Image (cartoon, rainbow, N blue to C red; front, side, top):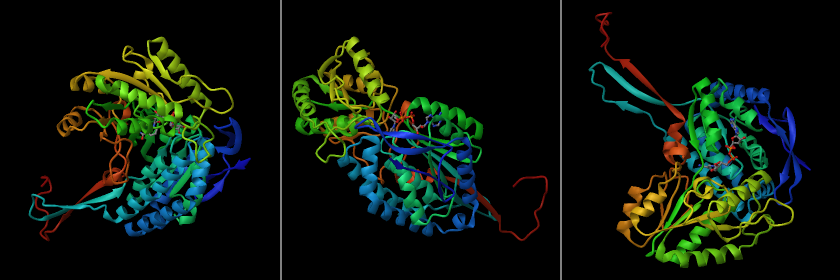
Length: 487
Ligand code: NAD
């Protein structure tokens, strides 16, 4: 069995206890992981706080921080094959996807490396003759970054990149499910030469997460995960009054009109729901299809789902790997069964396959007559597509917005005017038109409602890790006249 360690205050060390990580393709343990207890979390937060105020970090110029991030980007790129292999082995995500995604993670660090010395303050044309007033953008402090199991390197890069560019320090908690890639990434942080305590990486479950998010030294909690955990985090942040940014789940509509390029729409829908075995926050899990295009779409989707190569995620030919955990696979099976009981009709899939590993087949459910089925109302985080038919644009919008989530959406149409109307009408943080699941470090990413608040990506994310200091300088040499009147 391989063995991994925490990275706290520049030192690799074991946790308070240990647990075994399972390979989702076999269901068997393959690695020994450290598990952080509250004392480990406390040491990491204190190390981050010390580093935040140290000359080794606070004394660096923004350009020097950028150079460290650039070195980290190069190291991530060089280590991408090993990181991809570990993520595939520990989470079950197919190697084709982990390889492509991790190569792109390096670009996120590169983008924020370039941004570090472009976070500017401002000078104000103040309404008083003898004053100069300017604004300094200063790092907010210690950032607690918490991520779920899917895409851990990616979901941490969108937090670490902007936070480090801004000058913050970090305690990153990897998910207890599949933490190997982030614990390995700690070696790259070390090799890049970040001063001790600037980035601390540990893993553990709810107990470690709770200890971290309520820690008095944490100034900002950057969280990706489910809404229920987000509620715990908000309650905990009432203790330290930390700022929060929450990237949560979704029930994203994928809307196809009769005038769309159906071949493209079907291919994008397959990628939108079955890639990463559906474990994607932006999964297009609700297909809303105009009645005249319904049969053509379903025929293609069914054929693709049934032809998909399900198998070992480390095999380059595999298209659908296992779910990350048995718990997740079993939850999906229950929601599909409950949906069928509520009137959904299985078009394909829907049966747990025999054999080892946490597999679930690509599944399509016709829910046109079952609008309240749990597969319509709940996020499954698995390879399950629910289909509803509509007739008019208004009906499509009503279905699209009939969810408390608001993360992503897709619209397939050849009509430019309709595309604009849909963009205006959809309540979501992202609208993809005639494409789906595209991301970039340059473009903001995030949602509203149950999908959370705050945006990752772009300059705004870096500014989110800063606080504004307003500086007043009196330029007159005359004595201050009246001590009892504010000017
Ligand atoms: P989860 O909320 O159960 O866990 C996420 C992280 O929170 C884990 O590291 C976990 O250990 C930690 N945690 C658990 N309890 C905690 C507590 N009380 N305090 C602090 N931390 C705690 O989520 P999950 O089931 O692992 O992941 C799936 C969810 O993540 C889905 O809802 C999915 O949509 C969402 N997600 C969102 C995005 C996005 O960018 N919007 C991306 C990926 C996943």
